[in-house]
Amino acid sequence: MKLVPKYRDVVTDDAKELSKIESHIFTMDNLKTNFKKEIRKDSKKIFVCTIEKRKKNQRNFYTFIKSFYNLFSKTKNELGINIFDDFIIGYAKIWIILDEIHIEQIGVIDTYRKQGIGEQLFLLCVKYSIESGSKKILLECRNSNKAAINLYKKYLFKITSIRKNYYPYKNFREDAICFESPEIQKSFYKKLIYKKKN
Image (cartoon, rainbow, N blue to C red; front, side, top):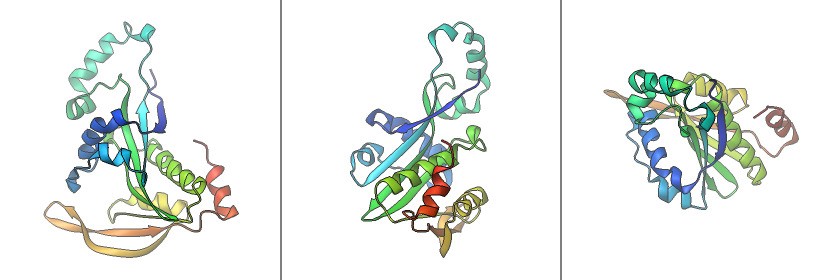
């Protein structure tokens, strides 16, 4: 059975699960976000990507497969969840500051990376920013995160500065690359964003 990712706004009941996957995705950062508080803030917006819950008539057919994954799935072992349940595999969190948006986090569980999920979460953030009337988007990422750097450049984000030794990394620290979008209300940028399919 192909697992189809779904995208939606966060709900309060997601807070506990988001805390679990944050510690899994951002292992080196030692983050402990209080998602219950974050979800309630008017200045914050969170999107999640989930794997669809299997239909009832599929349950018997997948009992064996479920047992197999319970034994061998990295996702099950690390997160204590079942890959056939409806659960969060990625999320994006943004901070609204006047007429600017700061993308604070975009993360996807290892097992589901390189499938375009991070890009779709990023595009949800950009579209929300455009539709809310914001003018620019700011973000930063690790110097070693080449996939993220290439994604931001693909959507015309420019490097504005480098924060030296910003992120913890094993026994030393890693630079942060700071990015800024073009003016996102410009017609050329809206055309770039909205021609992409969700």
